[in-house]
Every structure is written in structure tokens, then in C-alpha cells.
Amino acid sequence: MFELSIEEVVAESNLELFTRVDGFKIELFQRNSSSTALRFTDDQGQEIASFPWWDDVDQDLRRWTVENVPLGNILQPYTDLDQGWGILIWRQADRVYIAECNGEKLFHSLHWVAADEYTNAWTDALAQARRTPEPTA
Image 1 (cartoon, one colour):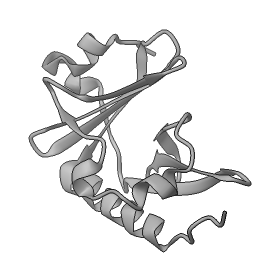
Image 2 (cartoon, one colour):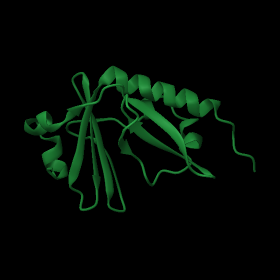
Image 3 (cartoon, helix red, strand yellow):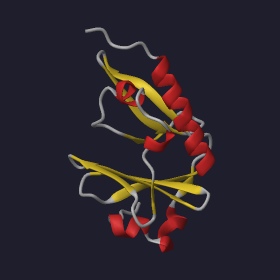
Image 4 (cartoon, helix red, strand yellow):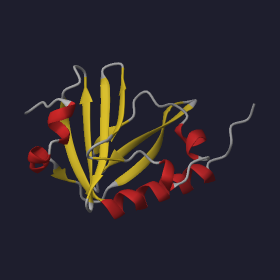
């Protein structure tokens, strides 16, 4: 196992450390009885990354378009760090790189997916969120 800092994760020399994700999907699921959450999975249903502090995802995604999805570039990756958890997401050429950490801001979960698969998975997730019934007051 290896652990990398943010600077080390996005260095081009370390991109060979990332593992290809087959069958990339974005799954919306009930975290508890009142909150929808989101995770990235592979074709076996294995979680490759999640957003543990993002509650009521479906409500947020109803207002999103593909332009709103988390995606940066190698110079400015999308970054979300909260309470010891973090994720970096960026596109380089035809790949999207996803790095997740749990604690200490050292990244240990490193994956990549084809850029069109990433975009298609988000398109599906946005459509699913829009089909989810609005919460009642």
C-alpha cells in the first residue's frame, strides 16, 4: 500500500499508480431513512469512492447539468476535503482520475475511468435524481 499527498497524486509521473475501473457507475442510495447518498462503483458493484459528508444528493442533482459534475484538470483538480476525508477528480486527455483519502490527507485509493464513461455515468445519475420524488414538507 502507498499513500500520496495531493501534490504527489496529481504529478504526471505517478499516473501509472492508478487502476482502470471497468464498468464505472454512479449509484444513488439511501444512507438512512431520510438521506440519499452517492458512490462510484465498478462493474462488480465494488465501491471505488464515495462522498460521506454529502447528504440529500438527489435534491442537489435535480438542479445540476453535466457542466456541474465534479471534474477539474491536472493543474486544478476538483477537490473536496472534509473531516479527514478527501477526493480529487481531474481529466487528462481521455481519462478521468479519481483519488480518495480517509484521514491525514494522504491518498490511497487511486482509479481512472475513460472520460466518456465518467460523463455518461453522471448523465444517468442526473436523470435518476430527476425521477426521484420530491420530498414532502
